[in-house]
Amino acid sequence: MLFPLALWAAVSTSELVDPTFLPSPLAVLEAFAEMLGTGQLLDDTLASLGRVGAGFGLAVLISVPLGVAMGTSAVALALLEPAVGLLRYMPAAAFIPLLIIWLGLGEPSKIAILVLGVVFFNTLMVADAVRRVPGELGQAAATLGARRGEILRKVTWPYALPAVVDAARINAAAAWNFVVVAELIAAESGLGYRIVRAQRFLQTDKIFAVLIVIGVVGLLIDVALRVLRDRLGRWVV
Image 1 (cartoon, rainbow, N blue to C red):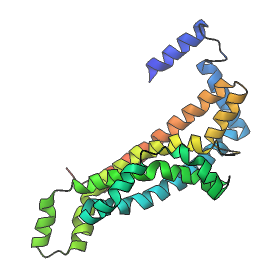
Image 2 (image 1 turned 45 degrees about the vertical axis):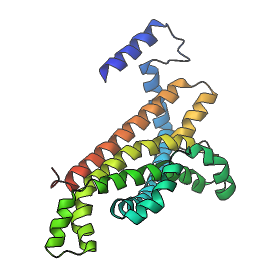
Image 3 (image 1 turned 180 degrees about the horizontal axis):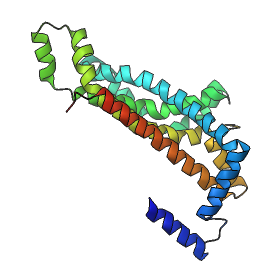
Image 4 (image 1 turned 90 degrees about the vertical axis):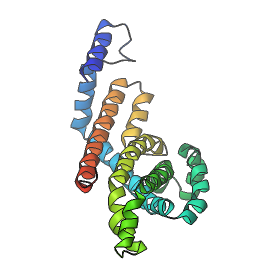
């Protein structure tokens, strides 16, 4: 962490690069304090968090049941995998014109971009997590009299849950990438909106400040999900 910061400070101090294009860490800190003081930064952070929470939450609610079905049923796998495998290669940003036509310029279209960017990858990762559950565990439970539904609830799902949370960790980062794209659609708040607005006026110090905020918030979410995974999966070796 210190090395890139020191390199950044050295390059900006040496004036090898115009400060308009590479502001100093101190200038970025001042821009951060200014935006924090006016309330812009907090409002934008809460707006982006709301969009990420809604879009990512919906994607998880959709993808986890689909992934579990694909991981436990050969029929569901045969029906769903070709479509999911195809759709995941379609860039979510390419759907923006359609989403504007279908949903308008409001929040629904922004949230839909996040859902499209996350749901297909998360579905396949959940399915892989479920398929990695050792078959011997299910066979042992069946031998003891467990039915298929009980094996799913009491064996398969608990074993796969930590890996499912890990998949969510990975795709939470993707959701933060897509929120910047989503906030290009007639947004009036959000961290992505603030970056684009700062770019129009060559306010690179504000751009750096917002990028750092995105990184810190993303790291906090990642740490929270790691703690959740460790607490939910203590029995998994």
